[in-house]
Image 1: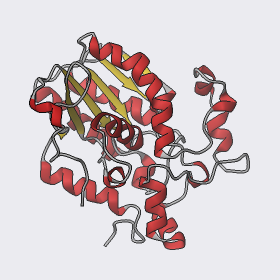
Image 2 (image 1 turned 90 degrees about the vertical axis):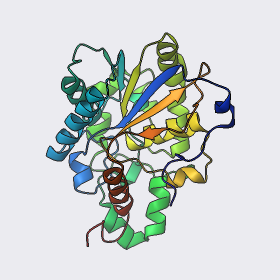
Image 3 (image 1 turned 180 degrees about the horizontal axis):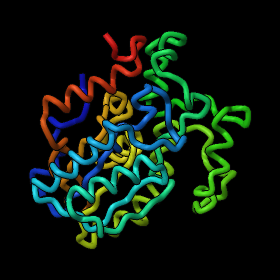
Length: 275
């Protein structure tokens, strides 16, 4: 199964040299990741294992000599907490951290809070996979009767966004995640990278997948099989036009990474990855 296009070199890379390094990171395991629930915009902290993942990620990056000049996170605590723990482990707590809702996880609408394995049992594994991994399929929207609606939309953090609260999404496909992410990428993050600063984006599974699709030109079909484990940094080497000069690389023990990817894939199965 294809997880990331690690074996595909963009054709222009033969002639281009790496000028910039960009790091993407799906936050460490969250409390609802551990419970196999659709977390989305519900604000959850890291699990104990997620804290360890973030700390180990920071130590790995430090051991490899990487340094950051700017960190971007979503407005969700698990993304922010991961960034803090990574920077602490690297001894780089002073590095500026900028937060924006446009880096938030995909909005799963009415599916928020539901258990993925139970959903697979009730609706079939293929349907759950479409909801989780497809590019242009949008789950049913959240409405005011949903148990987590008020918790999300009454949260004070969303009064600080660059759009009115009533215009924030009620459900999203991965395509819609990319659509709301690209303005921030182009207007805010790209100028920072092109100024020569090394950037870490501490995001979520789907915000990172959307950005990878954009940068690596992954097809709408192939993106379905791109799975990112929690707490594993992804290195992208980019040319002057921010095009990848080589396939992105997941840093760390490759056997452990593949096991972590399988664990994420199994969350959408009836047994929830449990044997």
